[in-house]
Image 1: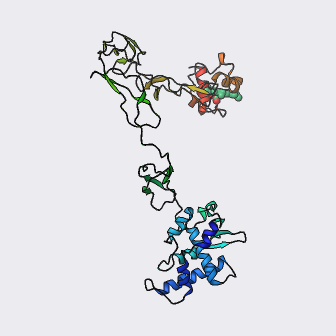
Image 2: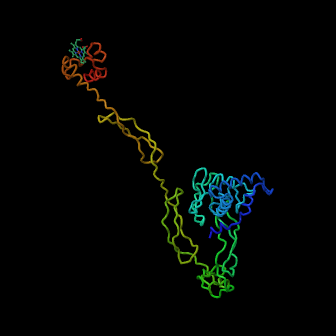
Image 3: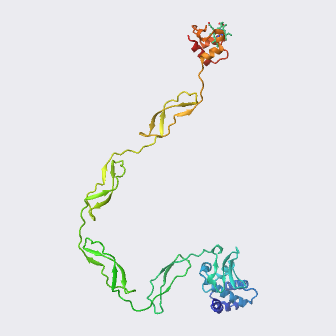
Length: 396
Ligand code: HEC
């Protein structure tokens, strides 16, 4: 069917005639531009129908091009090159650059393919008899062509239902600019009897009586089916009873005590039912306890002497911020233990053999000093500290 339409299309008949009659510009466009378009179309027609007589090839090409021009997915491609619909060549040089960037071919089975000349990517392919079923690859469009976006339409109201059982509407606007899509402009409807006025209704319950002495309800269903209008009773007078004052409440738990020394709670229920107002107690004084703050800064005692286990300790003197707790003061550290010099042992090793056991040393009572020991060449390689330890244990 589509094929017949293509073959019967006469939309370009005049054009083809123009193309095949050289040198007959109509004056509305420069003959040079038309000649260029003619050459471009002839070349493209040869690509589509190799080996076919030029005039027939051009006619077939223009028919195919016109059919392709109706495919919504391809609209951005054609519109990018300002190719009108139906395709015209005279005065419309857009066809020339278009054919410069895309190639249109078909195979023996009658599938038509649009290819990006630069990348070789297939932009569109479809059986000529069913272009609507074509596969479109926006990613293969020439780089300069903006891929299509779907339109969002604003419509008029539907028209009244026509005797043919359809109603129509029009597009008021579409967006974004340059979008493609198919607006829905007709739908079926039931054309029939003139509208029937509704005579019977079902209603929601009445709302509570308002202070103005009225209450309202809404229509849930109306009949007969498809009716319009009618006079549903949606409002009636009522006697407004002001609600009683609440006298009794249940409450949420008290909130945590705030730094301003108050805590609050909310009313969960109040009675009697439907009451308003009253004097619920929603706030009370409390004692605010600031949250514990962790200590971040400390002052310390001096380190203790290094212990034989290689550690020394100190104590925290003060911590801050004020009132803080915890934290991680450093109160112990590793150290290098130096054993104290043992004067008695040193004396036993180095002096006792000549000066007798320490308890009865002949050096006692002589007020010896380190300097004296050294003066008498009695140091025997010991350090001043070791000699001092010996002096100390010997005593004055
Ligand atoms: C090999 C033996 C010998 C040893 C070991 C020795 N002394 Fe003496 N020391 C002597 C003799 C002998 C004298 C006394 C003669 C002198 O005054 O030179 C003396 C004298 C002294 C005097 C002087 C006493 C004075 O009356 O003024 C001092 C002090 C002394 N020794 C300290 C030491 C000390 C401390 C040691 C150990 C580190 C030591 N000596 C080890 C033999 C020794």
